[in-house]
Image (cartoon, rainbow, N blue to C red):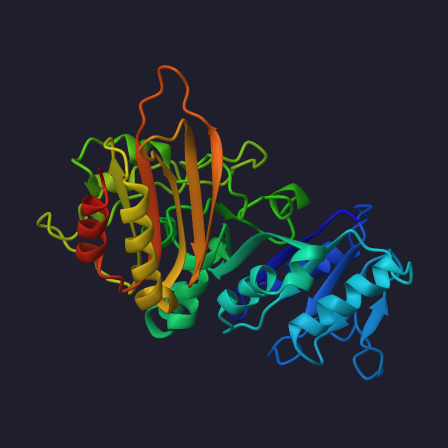
Amino acid sequence: MALIPATILTGFLGAGKTTLLKRVLTEAHGQKIAIIENEFGEENIDNDILVSDTNEQIIQMSNGCICCTIREDLRTTLQTLAAKKRKGELDFERVVIETTGLADPGPVAQTFFMDDEIAESFLLDAILTLVDAKHAAQQLNDRQEARRQVGFADQIFISKADLVAPSELEALQHRLAHMNPRAPQKVVHFGEVSLAEVFDLRGFNLNAKLDIDPDFLKEEVPHVHDEHCGHAHGQADEHEHHDHEGHEHGDPCNHPSHQAEGHGHHHHFDDDVKSFVFKSDRPFDPAKLEDFLGAIVNVYGPRMLRYKGVLNMKGAERKVIFQGVHQLMGSDLGPVWAENEPKVSKMVFIGIDLPKDILLQGLEQSLV
């Protein structure tokens, strides 16, 4: 049986997760989707969709979608769904897991990698984070959970943008790009999100593309880019299957308050969730790099949200691609370096108060 793609939907309270889910559930899109509700949520899908006082854990919808609430843990729920699908008792093509407004999506994502039974049935596609433009600044300032959700995202949807001034939206987009340069941002008015922008984003694919703003990576700063100004729109060409309308196309780096720290300018915010990039045209020594990354993940794993790299390893004809979530790290051989392609290693780390100097120094020392 082909693996069932799973999407994790996370986001701020009131950002419109329920609205998005309703649209996914009720739209005539011809897809059969199972939605897993984290029952401890503050905002379950409204009762007009789900009759919540039934004892049934799984409710079949008229358009073929399925809803189920998590009574035990996620693992059990996923196993139940997969078993029913195999037996032909339930027919669905994909799963969407809605986490509660303040949940950390990390452990949910890890379930798909740590549990062999789950990994044999499901494939984690992407983490989507919904950000409420109106309340974002406050929520990001006050709640680390909100900042973590941004750091984990493969795709960020910004809702309620029409309720804030353009300058406020732009500042928010810079702030989000600063925390997570991997995730394309899209301003959405519900429900104007096409399903192509929600599903099959392949955020966890070990692919040879490092989806960071390409312009940002071109900047010639020796090896290291300081806490950068990633553009909110730069990822469009990395995700050919996204249509990035509604983006700000301004250059965040032109704005003095968004310059990296240490360049004489200060952010008006300094979030604990940050990203940085390492770049080198010298090859890595595989044994040294493995030792160093192993040690780092051991110590800082809980604070490492997402990280990914496309690496040039000594003696390897092919690119090595690695990525991780918290302590879980995986790598794979990618395509052969093209004949005239510069062999440059690029890595991005997104995490909470990561010791940038230690990481950069250790990576530098792992080079040949």
